[in-house]
Length: 486
Image (cartoon, rainbow, N blue to C red; front, side, top):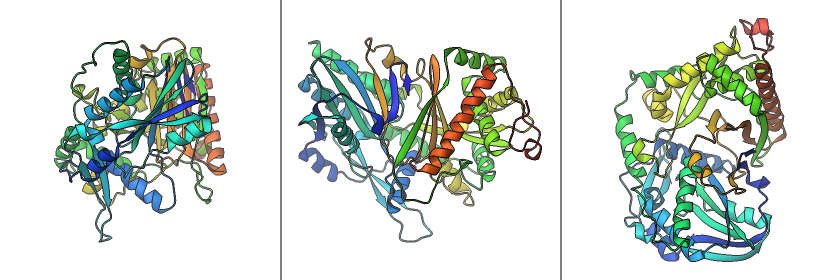
């Protein structure tokens, strides 16, 4: 999927030109310091704990869990290795998240929960990465190197590198999701670009503002969540949402498992709307007193109704939970908003309004991790793999905007899934003039058929509403029999 200058794809689909490969890896001294790092009183964030729990549990079943956030950016000329070495180490020492690694401790008693223990290096200067030359590499070797980043239970679960060609190079980063989120594609890469460009111009190192601290965020989160009770409105929101979904997150309403051993992750990317349709879709949303995100939830709800006859759609969408002081802080600052969209008896405009209302009123619920709700209401259960999630970003105004406005003409960046089995079943909708959708799902024929049907239905709904043909759904499932009334 190409959103303007941004490519979104699976690493299996990434075909960089051959070149000379250089990667940056930790020194033995840095690895030794990390192994000696003492236990920290700073807890893992709830989303880090969820990630580690899923990594361990899926690994015990022989499933290779998706874990890497991979980004790549083209740059002109020959890479100054000395300057890039400085930039990589400055970045790693600047952001507190890279000083930590995690130990996953299994509970002895089946009735108690497993625990995650953070270990933190006391001195950021102990982090040192050095370049390693791998020689000539084709696309297959490059993909293998990028995906081979150490796993989530290792300190050095992040790698950087360049692919040098005659007159240009590609800078890439492969970082465990424990340490970054979508903000890295914009703000993080911009930090690398700004520091590197300053150095190679002959100027002194760029003096960046304070980066904030992910540790402080984790402490603040635990302080906040410890004050929650069952009577807290946001806890009640989550409890009500889960109780309508068998006590946990909703499941994707089409089959995804064919019973065969896991073959990794797969990805489908399609154009949802061209430029004119995108503009008309936004006009529809505004006319309904809503925004683009409300329209997307309505489109997904109506598409799934047409496929399954569901009367109400239960969805989840991630948002950034950073404060203004944390806009440049690297870490995983993601919360989820629960969204409920009634479909039966609703026009498309009705569904837009309902979705937008839930999205807006549910933003405070994103600060409440669902796992904390489970602690307060033990009849609920933690999220299971492959819960559906809708992620929307506007490439012209979201976290990537600062980087896109600084890209030279013809330069592209890429964000890549690592080809492993995904935890959520994620529908990523991106807008940059046109609107595209990417769905990440398990690689098997049953899931592929279901996702193809889902994407086709979503395209059909978008075509219909942007063509001036509203969607009115019958009042009950029995009346509709899974089909819209037009």
